Length: 469
Length: 67
Image 1 (cartoon, rainbow over the protein chains, first blue to last red):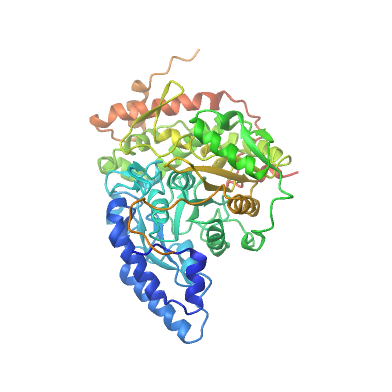
Image 2 (cartoon, each protein chain N blue to C red):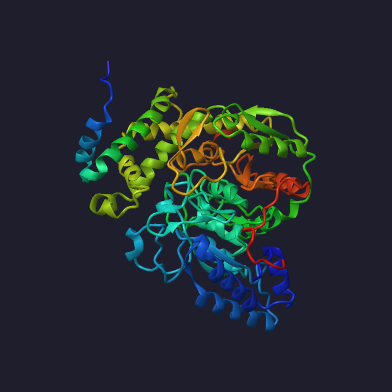
């Protein structure tokens, strides 16, 4: 059984005519059929569409036409992205009876236009309201590094599919950490771009003032290539900024000599297991930084993010909560219902506090370019675990996973979650955080740390029959 | 002085005001979930903000950079 070769290598081989897109896609489908039963990352495999698209691409190339920079790259998307002819379920049972999507989501179209081939839809927490992808309707997605543990969420299927090398590229979404948490727990690279950078048209949103889409991959370069292909304005998403694409691939190897890096302290050096802070320190040491910086108001930001999320999420689903709440996943139902009851003043104050917080962070980024923090407070925990002890305190095991991600997304900051090379068996991640619209700096730091050997995506499941690369 | 807050009283009444039916088997969990929100709302609401601090209609991440 082959594993997925990287995105760049796959596209290069197809473009050069060394491999056909059909062969690449067929191998991906074979891997998914063989291994996904154990992982449960996929909820739908679009085999027929994928093979037809690959055949079309091979014909284009044979006719002398450019098959695109992502030629033949198999990818899959969290099942809140519209896929033409399929109902967009967003991890729910309620939406199974929605009308099929008339066309692909904007980000899916961008990848397809660049030559990538969609092979399926991926599991998630219902309506993205969770950090563990323990979905009652579709089953839990299992962590490829320990099948008894969670993959993280809510984009757990996306992270697990890439971690298990079923596909070299997947798309997720991130409201409060739903790309960064599963990337960290599954040991892959994941990007939450600046809020407003990428179009969300055709995505089933969760909390509209926080949601962004973003890619997962197994190397910094692959992540950069995918991100560059996803950029561009879109009038179909009112939050998508009117901004020219700012590709990060050309500057990826420029080094970090001029980038001022600091480790977040205070809030970001508590409420986690010792190994997560040690992992961040290792990255900082390799990058040669000893500076510390405190993010003002991080705890308040997390609290306000929880209020904003609960209100926007509940309002979006209010008609279904009114008429068929019993069909919601027991993992999300009570939180959605409670969000519907939040007093308006709490929400408005939280949104105004957000502006104050953004102003504070703007000041912070006048002193530093990139901030390092842990991605999660602990590695993946066993599926089904309700609470976890930390420093003598019992905490909700899944809910607390967002403690380090929520304050950063509340300010819309671009954040790259990257796997830190570990001596233990379970992956851990670092967040590489930059000022708004400076994804390029986060990518350059990640590329430097990867080249120095402190960031890498660990191999898929030990003991599996995996050859070649 | 405000009365001590009791989510077990608030949740059924607020749901009734909204016309949101709550199944008896869900009520306890909804009360617990709302209690969590009330707890996190405490410090948020206690944080004073000047009136002139306006939330944007469309959130822009670097709006604080103006001026």
